[in-house]
Length: 102
Image (cartoon, rainbow, N blue to C red):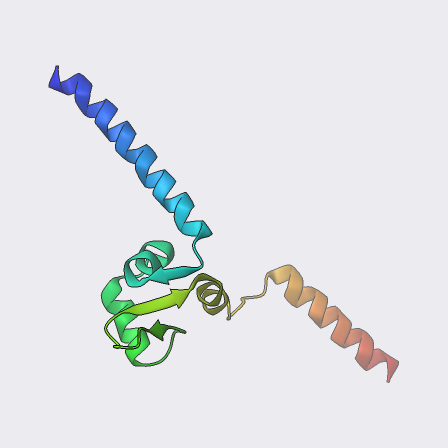
């Protein structure tokens, strides 16, 4: 009988995790645990980034807790765009056209 209960409990847990993750997407202000879950980075790495001032973050007036704005985390995560081959080709074509006009 325990074998039948286990899959049900796992499915219920999976549903709860999915609901938590969906709720996380709606929050504007995230704590360190939520940013770790959101980005997939380890908390220790996030703390290292905050100490280096390499990631946008905020501290409570007492300085004990660290918080992040989700929008700023999104901007930070996507700040270095890698161009696709098509984008590079289009840019090269535009440059060649400009050169030919001169």
